[in-house]
Image (cartoon, rainbow, N blue to C red):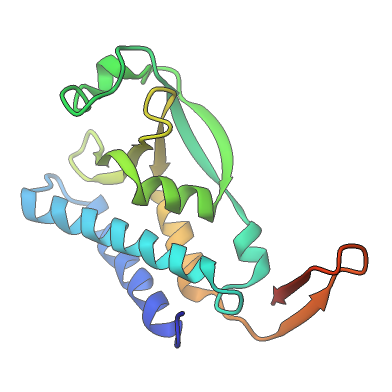
Length: 179
């Protein structure tokens, strides 16, 4: 259980600043690459832990959907021996779009079989590409830097001011609404 959410949310906002700095770089060296990986993984782990609570994230944020690009799988089965051959395994010329909630995105990043920061043509950080073991032979996802920043800022700035405990009159099931 998370005691005080501030200490989980504040690093997300600090990561946003670092991501923006990396966007403008002309070349990302190995150290910066690893720092991006760490910030993304730890950030999405924090987001998922916050989502598991009933009172640390607003219900509206839990239900918010974000744009997630994806590319269809076209090559051989994805394995540990070929998972770096992204351009042979997925149709990168035909991106498609779907909307997904934070739980889906955080879970796919945390349990990624393929994960890479996406570097733009200028050499800067432009987002992440990832797929889980479940999806690896179906889709490769891409979360743009704008969407990544939007997510980290939304969670980092989310503030619960009211918690209501309710009971469904039909099922008797109890639930919490955090606003």
